[in-house]
Length: 303
Length: 326
Image 1 (cartoon, helix red, strand yellow):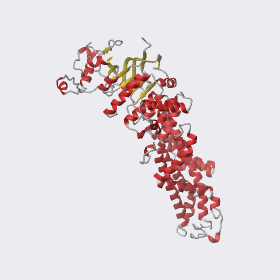
Image 2: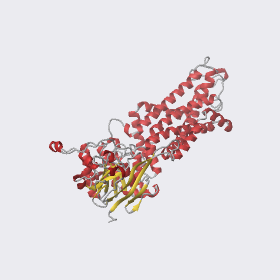
Image 3: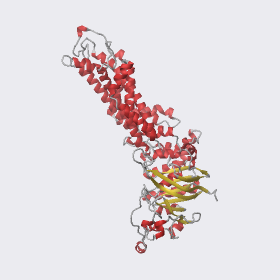
Image 4: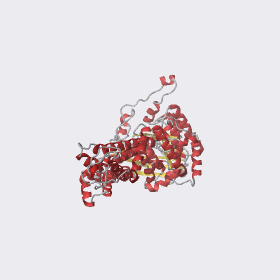
């Protein structure tokens, strides 16, 4: 996103790297909380990617004699009812959550931007028609759509991603459209038209950069929400099928059933979800502020 | 005779459709923002357009640039009738016509560097071949409007209102346009800055030979910068004349009233001069009065004024007025 904004000059390529580094420095200096969020997000992703190396046991290594063990040095977060290591399952679950969260957030934001920007900018009959279709789509309960889609396509990671992307993408297009309607009334959009800038360039250069604030918030809230929704879907048996671990299914299925005998089964995934979602939100807010030139630190810019 | 006119507007009307009941078709009334006006502008001159809020001066400016769809009439710009051209056909012509906006805060994209804002017309029309030429043009333009090179590396929010207006002017002039519509370019600025911007515009006209359509409600500023002045009321031209004739010998009662509202910086003259006070409000353009649009407020209105709409007399000459008194 940083590059998208600054790609107007031809020497952009050689500046890309230093721009990125400068951006990181500003992140740490001006937004320590956001920087912490970024670190946690990166850790979360690394955990997902290198799950096989980090986890001491496999996610489905059953060891019945050690079932429902409280946290100890052998089992950091204890074990579940059939003796699987909760820590290993959390680590592997990070992969599922990361894949679903990131891909749904990215695809749905893309859909939202395409629909929202065209609908808001062109307006008129096109907008009217598109928005009625969006209305119709949004009037279906989300859960019904998911259940229908999963029963047609079968349960699985990619089906969930597809359905959630469509659901969130179409719903989010409303928010993007609203932002576009506000931005397009600005004189600089009229000015660009009067200069003779092509419509595509107006959208790319004038409209989209100026709706990045709501879009980045939308992105991070989506990312966080998807992790939670995936938990709900797994609980209903519509998400990632077992034994593949996901934080949601750990929290709602095993966690709920053994809440009193083994509270760590619910507490650990709960805390992990909270930490990740909170930090994603912090990171998102920081990015939104830093990308806005008007919010640059009070220290004054170099000449 | 024809060739020295950059802009020749004939019988121009602009209407805004009011929203009707549900789908806004035939039921909606239309608001005539500009009602069949004709005027022309010569190469290198400045035509000032004055009038109250809602008199159609900004609409006229935007219509001339075809930023609006026009209802009737013809607009001959640089020898070509642009009244009915499509957006696509207009795009190449936009190199030759530009606009400076009133609000220096809203007219610049806050996410773009100033150099990119000024250089945008160059990119839009692909007139520069490489980035060196592009940069040189921008630096040259920054220099012309009195900003330094380094200022190009900043964002608009780091500038004051006057500086931003300079940026807007630089953007408008970088392609060397033939016509620039200045839509109240100084009314959002401090008085001291107003003079700077007006002088800059004046200077640039001498240097580049650009033609201005200068829209304002401040008569003193229009007097300073214009060669000719056009007075509008309720979508109509009431008087159009050479500057000195209009200011020294206003004919239309409305023009007289406007001019008498300019304060004179001398208490003696101020105490003794004659004021023409206007009564009442501007009628709604949705329901304009019959006859002369000004007659409900005019102290010299006669029977004739209520019935027949006066036409602009002597419109090719140096002093035209739309009034039954003349």
